[in-house]
Length: 147
Image (tube, rainbow, N blue to C red):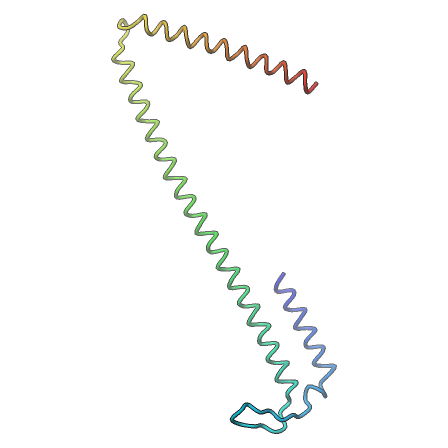
């Protein structure tokens, strides 16, 4: 979009210069403080200076856009590295949990603490039935509300 605006402005500036060539080339006296020039086309100098400033600001805006894109890319790389690190940490935690559970099941053994295992299994079954009942009730409620 910036390129299109720059091209349109340069074309308009060029058209202005063509239409006003006599005024742009009219000789003036130019004083820089320590030296004075006679017969300098002041309009042409200002036109060239304006064009250079326009191109300079266009380049500056492009550079700022490139910096923003580079910062975004760096941030995305950092976020991806963080995600990979967190995934590896989480997988190591799951592996440790699995090892712990396997060790606990091996210490329980097939005949030891059978009563505790049966009670735990009964409790899990009861909680499962209760959860299924609550989900069915919620489903019926939502069907009733939504039609």
